[in-house]
Amino acid sequence: MSCFGGRTSPDLFQNCCNANTLCEFDGRLDNLVTEPIFVQKVYDAVLFNLQGLKTVTNQSFSPAIPRGHRLKRVVDIRCKRFFNPENVNDPSNLRLNIDTTISGATFIQNCQGEELTVVGPDGTYSERIVYADTRECDDQGKGTPIFGTQNIAVTGDVQVCLDLLLSDRYDHEVIFTVCANVNIAQDCAPLNLTNFFELCIPSTQNAAFLPRFAEFCNPACETRLATNNMGRDLIVCPDGTIKANLIIALCITCEKKIIVPVQLCVLSTGFVQISPQVSAICSSFPQLFPEQIDDDDDEEEEEEEDECGRDKCKRDEDRRPPCSPRNRSGSQPRQDGKC
Figure 1 (tube, one colour):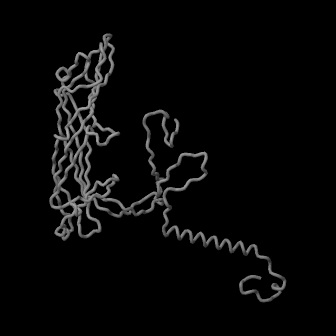
Figure 2: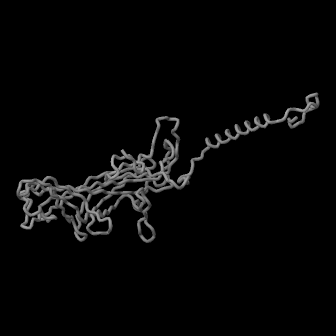
Figure 3: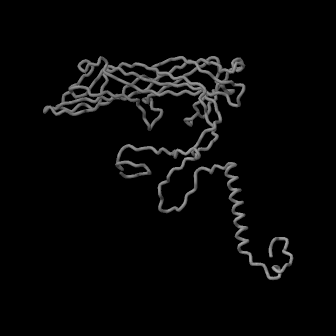
């Protein structure tokens, strides 16, 4: 076993890694402290599972199978969304364009008619501020329902890979993988999915912050041969190119949230302390976060100062010279307590 970057791994050249846990707890309740934190609380949320279908005919795959090999069967079919990290605006990227409207409430706008957005947990302006007249439900101590319609326009490509079992002229079998980017829809004619939802919002009168609306979706895809028959759905061209008839299912999970800012008291084991990587040059380094200071720390410091003061007085008394014979003979001592 070897250790690289503070992480134990059996091989320095392995392709995967383990993340640091960062938080440790020794099991002693005496080490737990209360901490106030300012966070975003999920007041209400709904979750949806949506799916859309796309049929593909005579989709070409590459590379072509080697000359002298024949196709025996399909071992596996895989599908994943396409994403180009070098161009986030690449039209081939699988994209979900979400358009959500609500009734029973409104999204706050500025004088130009633009909806106001605030920073969400993802670090982007992904939350919209919701306002509704909640006085009727406030009198009953309950939340106010709002209703929404969600339209998702899907565009871009997915990447499909086929694992083929090939056999050469000597009956030696080998797994050969071919891939293709399959277009789901263009911007001019997207694949549309629609659903409806209901959410509950808290009072907009009794808090300093108005509730916020957040939504996010995550797409995945699954694919199979159109008729689940290799003889009907796969074509091997004379040049070795594979063409296939496929059915692609888009599996989309979406969540809508009503979020309110709140202050919470949590039990904490203290600040995170990460073991730094050793440097052979610097002898000390600055800290990244300030120390926590509270009343208990001040009392402990005062007690330490009192103890230090008493100890110092005691040491001073031990170092005082003995009284002179004149004072020992009965003369009055000095008022400051010294001989």
